[in-house]
Image (cartoon, rainbow, N blue to C red; front, top):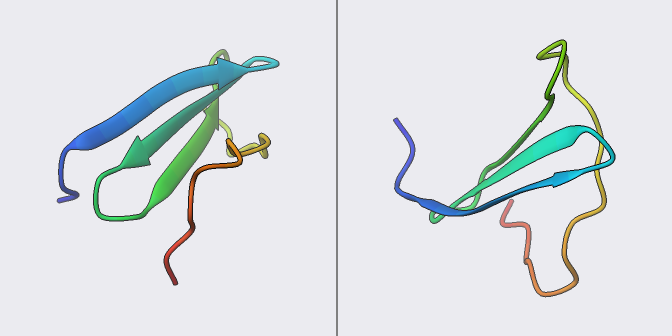
Length: 47
């Protein structure tokens, strides 16, 4: 399970959830299919 949720927002119908420990989950809010949304500039993707 992931750590807590850091932020959630919707961009152009794409629901983005950013977790405290790094992972970002993006799904279409209607179909639940994966989608690509622009990340906020201040978010660092940890690999």
